Image (cartoon, rainbow, N blue to C red):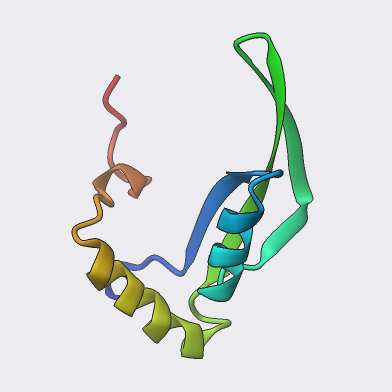
Length: 88
């Protein structure tokens, strides 16, 4: 992903999902507490928080992340490219 120009990867986790939060922190995605937001979904309010991986700031974690990516299999990244128009 670095070779494709991506230096930051972010994802959102439900705030109460402790297992997922610990997993992402362990593989190099620190939580961004300032990002916490409340969403209304189907009449219910849910809280979520963003986790951000900075590849250039965490070179040691990049190797771990790439190993994880290999174990998970192919990951679609074409929809992340801001230069490409989004399909509706």
